[in-house]
Structures are given as C-alpha cells and as structure tokens.
Amino acid sequence: MIADALRGYAGQAPERLFVLDRLGAVTAREAFEICAAITPALSRLTTRRIYFYAHDSVRLILALIAAQDAGFEVCILNRNFTVEEVKAIVRRLGHGLVIADAPLDMTEVDVFELSEVTSSTDAHGGDESPHANAKGGLIILTTGTTGLPKSAFHDWERLFSARPTSSGHQQRWLLAYPLNHFAGIQVLLHVVQNHESLFIAPSRDYSSIIDFMIEHRVDAVSATPTFWRMILGRIREDQQGQLRLRQITVGGEASTPELLERLISKFPTASITQVYATTELGTCFSVKDGLAGFPASYLERPVGNVHLSIRDGELYVQSSKQMVAYVDGSAPPEHMGDWVATGDLVEQVGARVFFRGRKTEVINVGGVKVHPLKVEEAVLRVPGVAAARVYGRPNPVTGQIVACDIELEHHADEDEVRRAVQQACRADLNRYEQPRQLSVVSRIDRQNEKLVRRA
Amino acid sequence: MNDRLSQKITEMVMTVLRAKGVETAIVNPTDSLYDGGLGLDSLDAATLAAMLENEFKTDPYNAGEFPQTISDIVAFYSSRPIETKSQ
Image 1 (cartoon, chains in turn purple, yellow):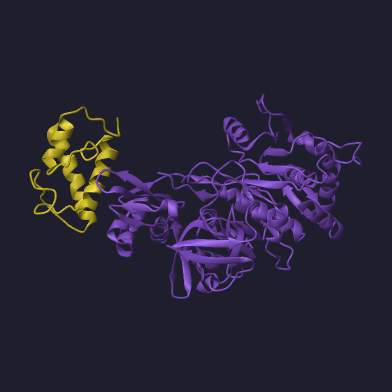
Image 2: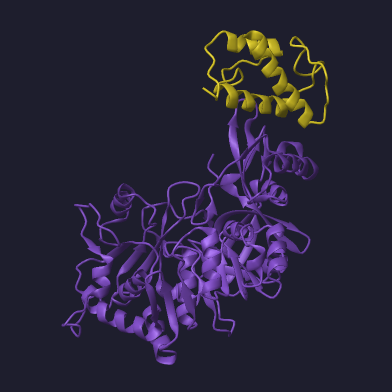
C-alpha cells in the first residue's frame, strides 16, 4: 500500500524529489524516514479514525502515509469547511480525532497540531501497535456539488490496484486536485508508485499556478475541465513555450470537444488522457484518443475490471474497484444487481458514447429536458468566454428556464461577448435550450475545481 | 410615473421580441402580448417574467396572474410599491 510503496521508492530512488510545497521539499528517503519516525507515535493513539483538516502540504502527505501505515481509517476534510461544518461531519461519521494545521476550538473531539504530529518520534517505536493488524482505509467525501457530501469508504488495496500505470518518463506532477478529492489521492498514489515528483502550488490563483509550473518544470497535470479552461484562458503568449506539458489528464467532469481541441492546439506534443472516475466507483476507465466521450466498443467488452452499460440513457458500471460502503448511513448508490447507476446521462451516436450531463442537473423547461452540458458546449465555443455554468432557474411560466453565468477572459469586451453568446446559442441550440438569462460574473462558483450547478 | 414604467416594460417586451428575431418599431401597451398580438409564446413569457423579476424583484406571473397586455403589467406594479434592483 502507500507506505510500502514509499519504502520501495526510497529504496530505489532515495534522493529523488518526492514532494515540494511552499515550505520546502522532501526526497523519497527523507519522506520515508519521517514517516517511519512518526508511525509508532501515531500508533499509540487510541482511536480508529483520524480526520485531517489541513491545507495540502508535504506535512499532510507524510502524516497521511504514516496514518495508513499505522492502520487507521483516515479522512481528509475539505480545508474550506468551517469549524462548524467539521464538527457536523465528525458527528455524522463517528468520532475519531482531528489533526489540524491550525488551532481548532472543538471540545468534544481531541485535536492535534499537524506540525507536532509530523515532528514527533517515539522511543518505544518497536512496540506492537494496537492497530498493527488493522486494514485501515480511506474515507472520501463526495464534492457535494448537488447536495450534502456523502462519505465513501475505500480499501487502500483496491485503490492501489486501480491506479493508472506510468508512462516510463519521470514525471513532475502538479497537485491540481486537493487531497480531499478522490482524484487528488489518485495523483499521490500514482506519484509514489511510479517514483515520480509532486508539486503543491502555494496559491490556487490560476496565473500563479502557471508561474509555479514554469518555475518547477511541471510536465504532468491531472485536473477538471473547469481548471483547464481557467488555465488556458490565462496563459500569456510569452509563457506558451515555457510550459512543456507531456501529460494532460482531464477528469472529474465531462470534457467538451471544444476543450479537447484547445488543449491539443496549445500542447500538441502532450498525451491527453480523459479519466472516468467517481468517488464511489474509483477509476473506471480512460480514453486517450483526444475525442470527447468514449468508444462504444467499451459497452461490448470489459475495460480492465470494469463493465459498462447504458440503461434509460444513464451509464451503469460494474466494477471490482468500487468503494466498500458509505459510512454516514447514506443509502447506497442506485443499482441493479451488481450494476451501479452513475447518475451520468450518456448518448450513443454511432461508434461513440457522449456524456450529456448529470441526471440531477437536467433542466425541465415546460416539460422539455435540457442538458446543461450541451448548452455549455455552445457557450464555451465563443471567444472571450473563460468559463460557463448553465443551470435551471425556477420560472412561473415554464417551471424552469435555462440560465447561464459566464466568466470572461481577460480583456474580453462584455457587450461583444454577450452578443456573440446569444448569436451562437440561436445558431446551435433549440429555442428551449437557449439561455433566457445570461449573466457575466467575476467568478463562477466552484468546489474542488468542479462547477456547482445549484441555482 | 406610469409613463416611465410603461416605457421600461415596453423596452423589455421589445428585447424579448428582438431575441426571437422580430423587429417591431411600434408596440402598443394595449396590444395582446400573445397570439393575435405581439406573438409571445410560453418561452418568451418565461423570459419576460425573469426580466421583470430581475428588475422589480417580483412579477405578475409569479404572483399568479397572467397579464394579457403591457398595460396589465403596468397596472400590476402601479398597485404596489415598486422596488427596483437599483434601490
């Protein structure tokens, strides 16, 4: 598992940079030594579960690996949660202790400082840990873009066997997803397993991230379409040649043809991989041909250990890599036997299957279904639009109307873009699909770099 | 007051008409908004409702009415204190 993989990494490439953050960097050997020192100290804690409430950092990663090695169940909480939200989640999921990177006022739960944990060592390190035989596990909270986050319990072994394989090149990955996100963990696992390097940018500001990637020669990034659009809209001409991406991975949301075309055009030598994964099912499959959707042949034969089918327009998956269960008492995902409903609506057109959006996000305009993704595709093709969010707004006449928020690229003229968006929608969309409300906003609401489509 | 209000609502109706490709120079406040008049369909009425709500924070459609003319809309707002988005 991850601690064993780090041991292997430290044995084979001890001086290779493993993780870098704003405070510094650790090599694989240093990381292994620190984890080996703190694991025994963690093992003495009399709890089964550890909640981490910390910004992504070298320290968080080392504590996470040590906690896995010590046999704990671990859950990384979104650092943007308020203390009240943290309390509510801990209450809902069951008690454990919290390791935080800032003082937390929580009386009902033990709270430890992350910096103290990662600098602690235990003189009695050789003693048998009370968790020595525990399998532990990882709890991932869903993004909650469509409601309350659910908490999926994953087995580390299943997660590890589901990771993608290396390209053979020693890649330098940006941590674009936060570690509380399933895809962030996937990137970390990939880096450890393949003896690569991980870079944590000090800021979530897109222009700073571009500078950071250039400074540290980052050549691999896994991120959402929303993240990629924001990055593409901010790369200056003089930065273009300095960004040498070899691996572009897109996931977390459906990609649009427009985005894939722009990525190919900006980074013609990069490999582009679209990953289909969910918090509950883990990584299901990937597509590397640079086209939107996936080949319809995936419906006819297993893709790795995953079987796919379409029922009533929804993608169903059968996978041996899926989560064990929700640990918050939520009802399991809708299923038919071993087939799990993904909530993703798809349509087969010839030899290709295209994503049409989330089942819960369909807009009902006077009884006619509108898929936000289709509308967003039309809007995002308009020059000057950096990001778009399409959602249903309640309406007394038709039940809902299509509303659209757009974020402009730098220096784009608002009136011009508005006119162009209206024109593009009239040309490309049916009347009921055309946005009846178009708003220019300074920042579209995002969680974990995914659009939030709640009205 | 009512003239300004009538003019504002007329502009909104003309915006809805332009969006569906209808260029109309003259819109009479007593013209029917729908069939046989200005020709707004349900989608256009939905758009108009959203525009009115954005501007005045309430609208006749949401209040359970289905105004037949611009004058009806003016009458709706004349009968209550108007709160515009600029206030």
